[in-house]
Length: 281
Image (tube, rainbow, N blue to C red; front, side, top):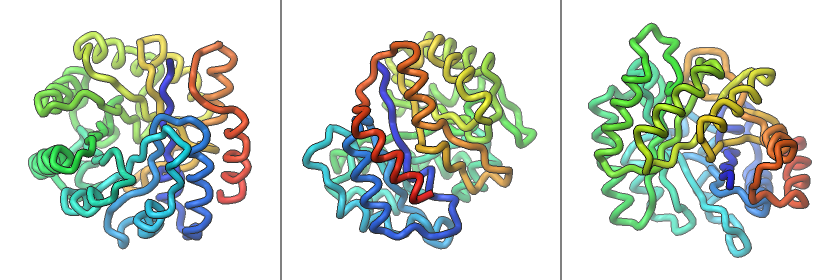
């Protein structure tokens, strides 16, 4: 069974025009009816850095969670924001992005490796105390465009570090669209073989024409958990490089149907969300 996580947060965060809070709430409530495993609804970060996400608390307070099995995830910039977020009963997952490129980690969160690992430890401890689950996303998992050393062995070493902290769910993100389909398949083949009790997720940024070959490479290597975004919107605004599109939810769903791959999405609920996304974006 394929697991699909939808990220309106990733779709919205880089937009300069502020989306009205009510539109965000209405849209996310539609997404909660579709059958996604996780919906990534926003972030607790500095409003100066990402002004689009400054209303995430209000969004959380207005989610309709009565008739959904979807879990709620929110991204945080550090343990301070995680402590605030942990007070919201609506939240299941606290997501902290960790790049195995120190240059990108400094661009994104103004923290080096040592500082970031301390934040991760605090977030994990906080999740234990508050009955939340930590998600530590590994950025630049498929290449490094910043002239730093990169290799599958380096990625495996970092996975080992996070494994030793007790993490058994790890998203691997190609934030800058660096990985080829061949490399993506090679990465997943190696990490799934080496860490058989970790559930790996694929967060793909890619040119539209390369999306399906890369998805197929990950799937054939054993990945069964994918992130998507309606209309393929988004991209990380902190990369210092041109934004690269996310995996389009509808294109991914059509690929699943074509290949008769089992999933939990409710097609009747999918189309109203698509129409709402067209209005918002």
